[in-house]
Image (cartoon, rainbow, N blue to C red):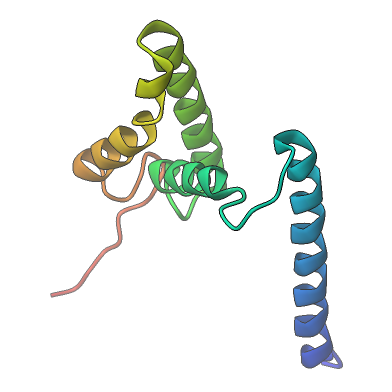
Amino acid sequence: MGIPVRRVVVMSFVISGFLAGLAGVLVAQISGSVDPNFGLHLLILAFVAAVAGGLGSAWGSLVGGLVLGVLEKLVGGYVSPAAAEVVAFILLVGVLTVRPQGLFGKKDAVKV
């Protein structure tokens, strides 16, 4: 079909690397420093939001992120800021226990 596959793959890696570097620079402005654990907390929260919403659903991940953010702020405000750190783990375990495919995920049909 005339699509240079190698060039498309290389350009996707170049663009994703550029966007990751740009995101690192922007987050460094907020946190004030850069270290090896830079952004690890955000990565864990993003993973929990994606799993809670459903890995196959973009809207589910968005809703999972909103639910996680609201719960974290409510617990941090009403209980204690230290308890807000545990909310992501509790939400992840709760969703995986009740509905393993996530809130908006679809069950896979498996033939036996």
